[in-house]
Image (cartoon, rainbow, N blue to C red):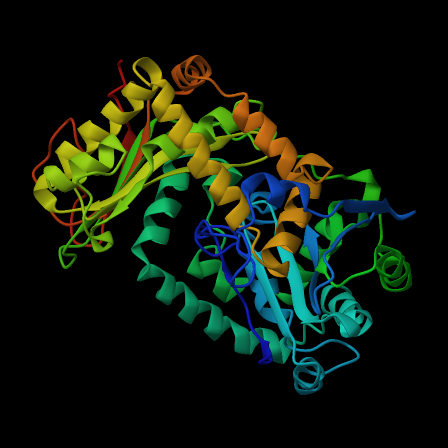
Length: 488
């Protein structure tokens, strides 16, 4: 096992579970494949224990020789203000630059000597620090994670050094047009609210954030009841609880002056924003309406609906016989180079949309057929459409848990979102309960007569009221209310 100390990054496409693909579960050659039903029955139980200070310990024992253990925290860019936006991301950079007990070189040597991987990511509502290692090294992994989270050195010299690193990463992210487009989508859909802020924050903040800003962020949000110590693989739950008591019992559960942070509602606004760059060969566009929250009962029908719309990429090859109507049109009419239906869910809201990459002359057509795909979900979705969507979704849910790291991430996020780990068998039952009528009713609820939010990163085009309007000047961005509705 190679050793490394690295960072996953943040926002769309950076957190785990964003690009997981379905898998085929099979045994050794000469043995029968494991059926989907067998894969559900064989899932180990997720055990959950809460410490006296409110920190939750959750694990799934699979008997692997390796394990992944990490700390999932209910904190992210949504908890930041305009002044300190990017503080969580900056802390992610600082986490592996040494602790009060281990300077950076010693920390890296400790991880390397274990043959382990130490990693982290930040999103809009979650922060995670985790390590994949041999099962026998679980105690040392938990000890190092506790130091990284509780005793980060935050030296002034290291903070100044990391400013340049953060600024370079901000420049690199500007080259990832999917991330830029989806960040713009959040900025216009949730304008004036914390969800409209990017995870990385503006470059101005990266230059001006102080050590005290980072300390204040930790003291405000790194509280025991908002933390989950999650583990999967060759772990023993009783041992993990003992390690948690040893290393995390001292994490505070109190807030200064009882000032418990409460998330304010993030209003969705039907609007549009375009960032123009005449050097771009293709347009990157996202259209979305307000979606369901993570705990909403509508989440499963919407997941099935997105599976029906599906995705497409020109590099797949073929495509004429794809089941997705939008994918077939993309092939036959040359509508786009790629598209993907998505649903980003948060604690109290979400974004239900379609992201696509296309030629200049095809933007209007792709916008039309994307909304037509939504219309079909509300009016003409069939039994066969829903059956196919269910199968795609089930395969994805099983496939995305292939390994201790995605399983550990799934446990941590579930405990934060739902207060428990939702087992695959329960997801399966909820998916089976979805009917065509349910898809039509739920999609009508979210799509019918709703003003969408639209974001585009593209080149100069003629203004068209049914497409995204262009900005003014190279690299400029125009932000305005979106007048057109999705009429069915």
